[in-house]
Length: 317
Image 1 (tube, rainbow, N blue to C red):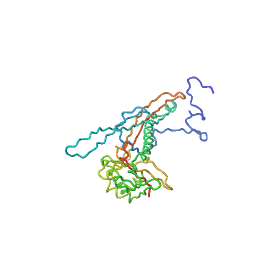
Image 2 (image 1 turned 180 degrees about the vertical axis):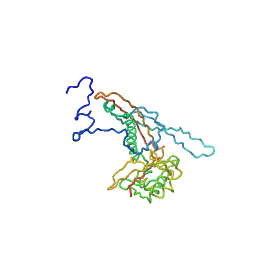
Image 3 (image 1 turned 120 degrees about the vertical axis):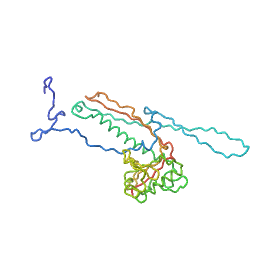
């Protein structure tokens, strides 16, 4: 088909440029709305429960941060006229490796850009930012259980009591509205026995546990002194010195016909997290007429101190 020079090509009924559909020989125009259907994202909690002290020290995937820990000073008995033992405190180091990287790479065709009255690249960048958070939260939360001290989880939790049952593989704890507070208090006791500071403690629960709390007597008696409403990071309030968060991204496992969840709790001292969006750029596409939007986020996380973390391995009762 010949097209006269200077004549804009609007396409045919079979071409992508065709802007309507024929129904019984009647042209039906397609109208593009200037409004979008709202999109809802899973609440992310990692930034609220981990320390991010070393975030400014990373640039690219493969970077390593050497973290020095405080030495433990030995206290000895003293008697008159004795010679003093000399100790040279040495601090061990922990290495945080930025060994994770995620990217996105999208193309906006020129034709699509001309037909749109929205800033699509900006919207895509916003969505990518939220998707990064969800993917990263899911991955890092799944790493935490393995780093928790053996004294702080399982059927014999408690470094001193050794008799607090927080559930374990093949024998998860069954959580109901009647016993949920007991389990929360038990996790607090486990941290107490490790001398973990009360200020700054956090607890991350799945939605079904949050629902139990909201419908129980705890909604008035135990969630107090907190005028903050539910925010994007899923903050609920406070119970037994824990700032509570709700997340649908906690790690789970199959236990028979049920799904068990790792309900995580601790202090930011126990977990470090560092992340940088190292690249966000636009460029012309080589393979099509369009603009590429791509981004790269690098990150790493490490359990620094397993005694500052605990978990309840539970199924819904």
